[in-house]
Length: 349
Image (cartoon, rainbow, N blue to C red; front, side, top):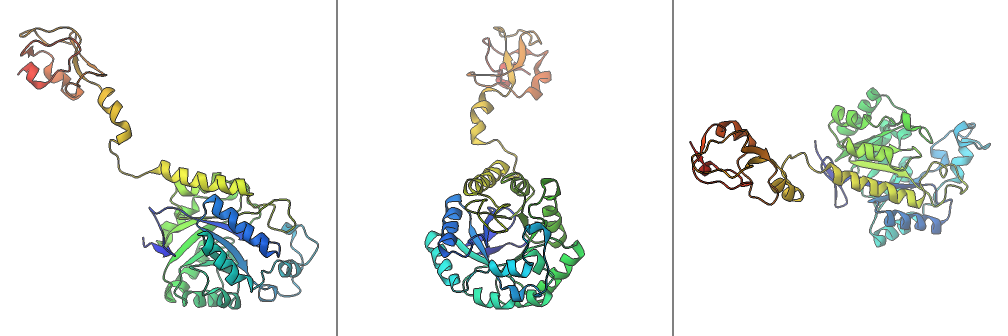
């Protein structure tokens, strides 16, 4: 499976999980709030902080009606219009992120937004609802930037069609994210195992865009299953006005998520089975070996009564237990003191 880089960060199996702190539209139209969100993402240890760049007129038909999940009497068009991020923020937020040592990203929802963002983002994030917009995908692929694409509300064959479009258009790197388009997503519906399915089916790095309320369970499970990317919404305060705050993580929860991801990576370690340095003391003192349990004189028979397989403790370990049956019944070649580890030189063979 091919890896790719976002900035100087390698993304793919065996690499540290690329953590995207999704600020989205939780800036509430305030640049100071947007910068505070950047600070929170930095403090939590995220690799990137991501906003969203769109215009309502490029997303919805004007007579779009209402949507139930937002619990807002306004039309979805009016809600989206109220969430727009001013375009003039883009260079300033980029520079602020650079100053703070975190990657600036923003999801474009249309060609105009992508054009504005192109010189400021190291990779494209494609939202689930845009992932079957084939003409738009072709435009993104032509920019020579890697693409991270969410797959919520799409069947696997639809994902395949979009992947085919991107590959034909020559995308330079692709990752697919399991995502469930429900805000919030019930934990029992997040289906983290799809992270494995996406990697197996398409041979690209996969990950999770998580909308569950739990800050650690789904991200930890995703990393354990090989996720290369984890994305999750966050906010300064769940009680703030706006449709995306209630299902987002607060700063302490974002911190807990990143910590849990890094702890999970550390616990996973490598697939190599070997004796580790941290095991050295018990390797030497607690692994069983062949030892004398009585003083044995030269010429005396070695029996199951005077020779046993025991832990050596501070004694030098004797022969491996697999040789126990080979020496029982033989005679001592020299005097052997009680507790001594029996070696081949001690046995008259």
